[in-house]
Image 1 (cartoon, helix red, strand yellow):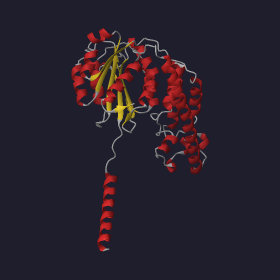
Image 2 (cartoon, rainbow, N blue to C red):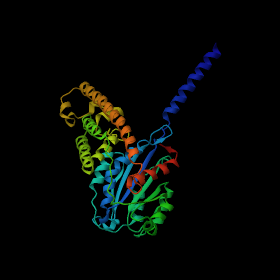
Image 3 (tube, rainbow, N blue to C red):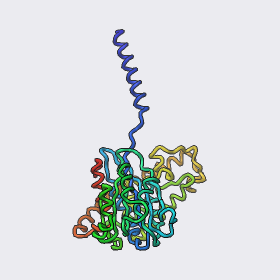
Image 4 (cartoon, rainbow, N blue to C red):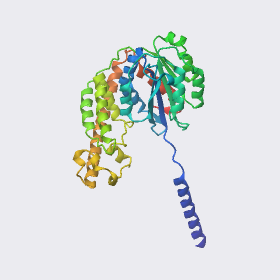
Length: 373
């Protein structure tokens, strides 16, 4: 009996020690796909910027299906503009528009803020600047990608592109080049050499090609559901209302390009990558980030400002249920929509448009790091 009791005590001590050890171990970081877009905003690049605005949501939607084992990676996008004469010459006509962000509305907002103007295009320098300024992180399982797009020789500027790309490789960052123009001209302009050195893909696009958006029988219903989806957001905090307003503005921006673009954005808003816990109570509650006692009621929608804590919680629960139902319907319709588009696109040539070349490159490079779709 004494031996049995001693064994039981020893087992209990081991269990407590192991649980204490396990709870003190840092949780493994979730994998992140980090994409830095370096866009030439000189005079001739209006078409490139318009493609980026229109096709952001298609790229996001495709990346939402990415997997790393049983996990689904995060997505962060950073944005630089270069080659614009309105930017400071001492900075190399380069500007960081956005540090790595998972805020999809903010990414859209920054893309729509870009304006073109003539200037000098220093590819080596903008790559080097993005390496130094961006928070690339050190998680070995992250996928780190640069996509640089432009139409002038890759060799311009005081920083040699080879030097910049060597630095990128040391940080496990893949360099992809997108030449806006003829394939052979891009080769002679050393864009292909840049991609070869950087372990990435060399791509060409026709930046002035009119994007053909395929209309489907499911689009109108998705647009209606998107308006209902917006009504499930409950802003809070100092930036809550401005973020809520930005969400609506990005819908307007998407719709200004084409009705189908707002459909693609609605699909993104129903994906796991569209997350707004910093300003929306429904998402914050899902992440268990809400301390209702600290919420300033004056920063809530008027309908909630005179409600009790229990009433606010009940309202959040109701809107969460509504949102899940709406997002589920959008996802179901999108499956039908994607199937419809796949049949229509069989004979369509999309090889020289931005979203197509980027998605193909990302998928190929992701597979080398054990990501899958």
